[in-house]
Length: 207
Image (tube, rainbow, N blue to C red; front, top):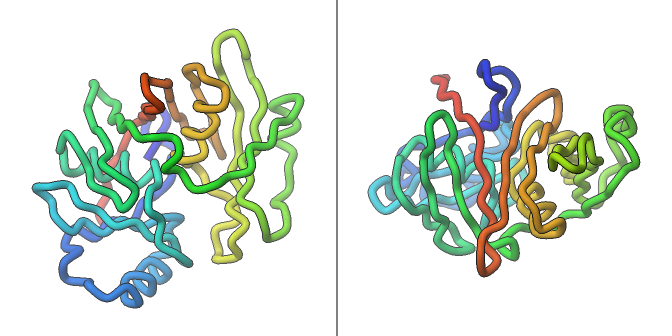
């Protein structure tokens, strides 16, 4: 998810197509932990777009990265998450979802003075979920960002995120082009009534 133009970079997503086959929460957590991705999405109803999102340590009511992946896979106009109904659309090579910014889990948005400072950061100690960012080109809305979940569950840095990008877009109240991690690309824009749209390229692979 959120790949570069040639399919490079991006953040892998675990997808369980037959979520109904894994009904117990403990089993879902154990599977997400075994897969080891930053997030795993269980598709509980393909037609209605009902999904359930897990990290290796917890369930998330909403997360942008798995919603973009599920929207690309299912091609439905809406997804149902535990936080609410997410809008979805497709535009050429991009898949977009729109969500309310207050659905996003809390994140510490930490601004730095330059993209070079963000590049030089070490992984911080376990604790707050930190989204480190700086302007790369402020007039053009270009951001350099890195994400540190701080959960101690094996995901020290998240290559590409959705919820944190949504929160940053809501805070700055302007469209953004975000380069995160090693080179993942995330595009966002604020909509009316608290909705934020986020999109990127999705490359499907089989494991």
